Length: 86
Image 1 (tube, rainbow, N blue to C red):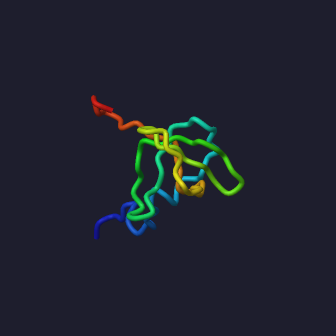
Image 2 (cartoon, rainbow, N blue to C red):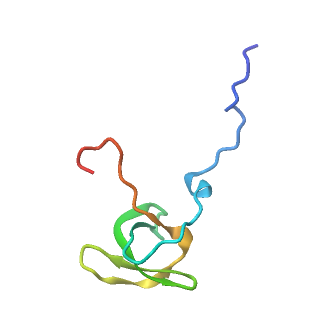
């Protein structure tokens, strides 16, 4: 019988369950969670902070998105480590 590794049988926790929303200031570059497939999209910034979330601006054209985003669906933009083009 082989010894049991500590990771065997451990509950798997998704990346989103480990993250806790952090307060973000207007102008902060962020990623937003797609409501279609729940993936993260880059190219946005916080435009306003409101009681129930954030107003988001698309950086490519400066357009304000017509919805308020829940803090759990907005995170600071992440840099891809080890990629020369990022």
